[in-house]
Image (cartoon, rainbow, N blue to C red; front, side):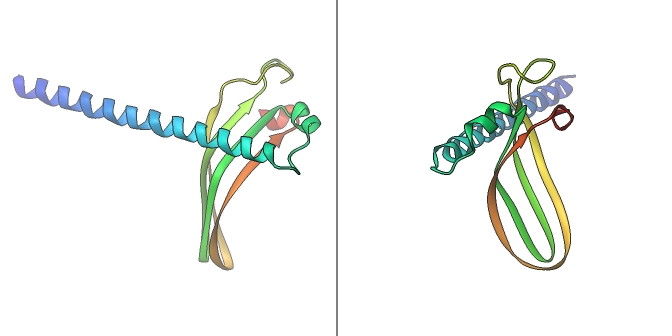
Length: 127
């Protein structure tokens, strides 16, 4: 009986540590996305303000990594923020966490890391 209680407590402690680590990673992902968006909006040839005002959602993927040697792959994690309201015209809401993954085949060699800011301009894209 004591052995099962000790095992259960150890399990709960490890699960709590895992969830705390996930929370920290998610918080870091949101902070990185905010930093990328701030940097892009501060450059001289930034995204036009009227375009951002018309956007229904914004997807920010900081440091999407791509690599290939014949067979390639890409991987990145970021956030999506949408406007509230039935027609996506209200205030900006809370971020949702997303991942971008892909595989490719063909003549390719190399690697890179890129920051992406995607604007969703219609309700169909937001859904």
